[in-house]
Amino acid sequence: MRFNSDEDEMIIKEFIRKLSFLNFSKYDRKKSTPLLNPSKDEIERLTLKEVDSLISEKKYKKALKSITTSIESGAKTNNILLKKAFLLSQMGQYEDAHAIWEKLSNLTNKPRIAALAKKSIETSKYLQINHINSVKLLIETLHAIAHKYQQKLNHLPTSKEEYSGENIIPAIRREAEVARAYELPKLSSEIIEQTLQAGLESPLLINDKALSMSMLGQHQKALEILTSLEQEIKNPSIKNTIKESITNLEKSADHHQAKRSIYLIKQSKVLAISSGIEANCIPDEFNANSELEVKSLIFGAAINRIKTNSKACLRIVNSILDYYPDDGASMQLKGEALAELKRDKEAINAWLKLVHSEHEETADKARQSISQLLAQKALLISAEKSPQEALSAYIDEHLKINLAPTFNELIAPILNQFGPGDETLFDPELEQHQLQLQFNTIVIQRLEAQLINQSNSKNHSPAQKPDAISKTASKAG
Image (cartoon, rainbow, N blue to C red):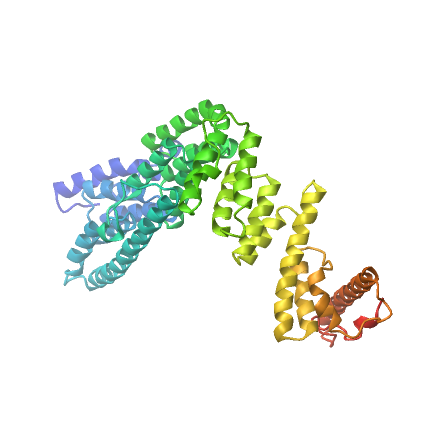
């Protein structure tokens, strides 16, 4: 192969030396015959192939390093510069990316490159605006979360108007660290979780999330997250940070376990105040109360507010569940508070966690709570639609969540609309039995209709509609 000049030859050889480690393992280099005098086009192809592979794995920093190596070796082609600008924009370095695209867009002798650069600038600016708006919303949300815990975030911009596009992950990490130092691990956890949900990514955020989880009592899960993260990360500095966190987690597990009650008291107090409740309803952290006593006193403060301040009740009972996630009474109360706040789906989801409890009383109460809520919804339906439709909805909602439909006193008025009852039954208990039998018959009819419909649908033959309940069901039983 001929070179245009000695300088070209020197550039090519230097590039091959620097790029070789990206394309071949040590084993491959021993076995393979090295490329002899590749053209600039071949160098570009190899570089872009490696970079595209790294981009597919979202390893933008490593990809940019490969691009930099190529450029330093003299292979500063337009396609490589396009890729560099793309990587810079992906890493949030928009101004640097736009500067490269701007130069490329002015290449009059390269219309394809110029057009791509112009289009890239437009798209990137749109993404930049969206990114800034997203971070502004995150800043606003984080301040609201901190206010809930009676805290101020001093390392973040005080308002979204002050944010101008800088990397705020270090500031967010600092705020989470301060929250943990104040023994408010749940605040730290919420700050990190909200940041991750907003799309900001960093292995150090995952590291901090694990530290928060450990303080909340989820030591084993936190350790698993850090161990897995440490194996994935190649950056030596970040790897060392994660190793230090693992060591600290192993040393501090018993310490955090012993301080669970104190963390719970502090968290409950600040949430009570921000919810408009006197903090004296929460026990003092310096009193020598047992874990059970602390949990019981805080539970009492929550249940006493379920009617007068359901939001406060929910916040406080959630605090108990943050540190004692298996506490059945607190989960039951959480469902009741959600129901009071008309957050029906969330209430049902809370109770569903209890319906298979080993404690039959706990499971039975959860099932009754779900049926009660679904019965209330059925009554609302019956005010606008037929009793058949209302009862169908009541039964179907049970079946959707794999719960056996059970009779609830609230649906008695709906059942009575199916037809006149037996007037000879003056005994309320006997009347209750009749309604129960009537309901059981309707459930059986409903299930049979569904089975017939499912069977006949395979043969494309008409069947009774699954939402059809016999009007003669009242005669059954």
